[in-house]
Length: 133
Picture 1 (tube, rainbow, N blue to C red):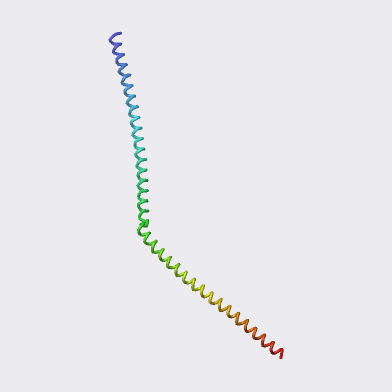
Picture 2: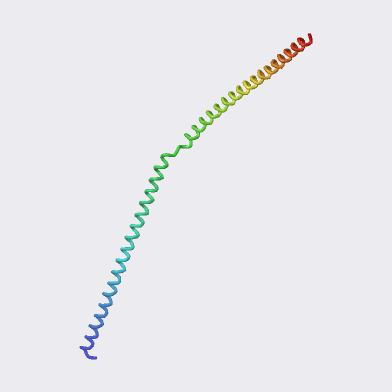
């Protein structure tokens, strides 16, 4: 091979290598750009998740402010339980009074029946005495 042919082959190899390197560089640039887009997308998704988590945390903190502390609940529960017990005792006392009143009224009614029966007997006895005379 002549020097000129060798020079042409060398130029041809250089062009081939340059073309391959340029192609590799373009492919590498494309992969790099795709990776950057994927990274941006992942960053956006993480940011959205963090915002959602922060919103949930804020909501939970606001909700926690409305909770009744256990000590306060127990104190108020005890007060209500005492009031309920006092009301039940008062109702029991009133009920016992009503029951005594009912018994008294029944006793009066029974006594009235007895007196009415006696009056009837006296009246009958009087009529019999009048009839026999």
